[in-house]
Image 1 (cartoon, rainbow, N blue to C red):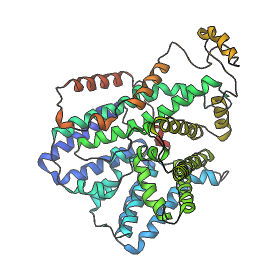
Image 2: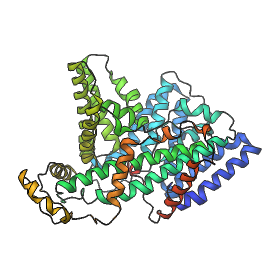
Image 3: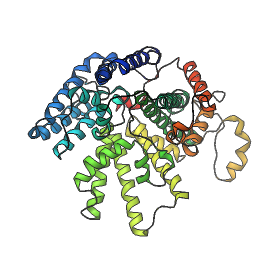
Image 4: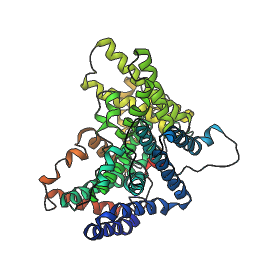
Length: 467
């Protein structure tokens, strides 16, 4: 079931909220159980085949947490299951069967690995099964994150819930902002990216740049939109999920980018991979090695394919170069040019991330450099003389796959402006008690919701469902 579907908005969510508010008044101790059952139904609605996998994972990890000697075995078992579903097709080609990736397996597996590791380190694993089930399966985060930490969530599930109109108001507002990011921004500009990354497309200069920019901002608004919707939904039940995005395209260097992009995954990789590998405690060479290993494994987490390996290696290399530069110059990257250099580096890596194979990624990168030629729309033919004086000889036969009368290009320009210069969601709604549903912002939220409804004729999955 998708957050951006009519069945979720007008059937599932109202039913879950109705049950929540009834129990809030009459049986508040049952609310955790109600939300856990609703979350399991949510997961099984689309495909019941993998509901036993989720339930088995929850029961197995809960049992391991009660027996300290089984904790390391539990971590190994989680990794083995994840590796089977995500990487068997990659490492065992031609094995005779196609393994379908269960939706959300990366997120609920990483959540439980962190839980077991913390229990092994001496953390508290004595939670009630119903609360642990809710922690793992909680429907706002289950499919595409954020990656939850039990120390943040269990105290919220343990306390008795209470009704707070401010939570409802801000939850609905953040949800609608996330829905608008997906429906009004990410989906419309996806038509600009798909043709560029098709095998054999060999995009020319302008085409390659438009397609790369389109995917860069499609991915951002698709995934940050999902994260906003998850945070907003959770606030309706009085539960606060961790932030996952903080204007990452405004980062001045790659380290800052990873502190702002997919923040909960970055935290997981730091706390449960980079630090156990040794972090920066054993010298410069060891630090650079650990950075590379962490990012390579982070790339593989996204999927089994050489494109993800190379993407992880690129970001590992970026981090090594940045830290080497800072050690050499003993100064941070100046924000005025570091921000744009970082964005270009991230975009180049997104090309590899998005491409179906390395050959296609190479063609798009060549296109960005103009190696595949230059084609401009016919209305710009008047620029032929000035461009020829610069040594450029474009043809003016148009961009092959863009209808210049459509709204995709203006939508891309709006998306770029919002991501690069506008305040983000938490900045907009950081102080919810200072405004009420009667303010002008509520009117804008209602108008945005109506616009989303009128544009939901074709429901699309979120990009991170495939990871």
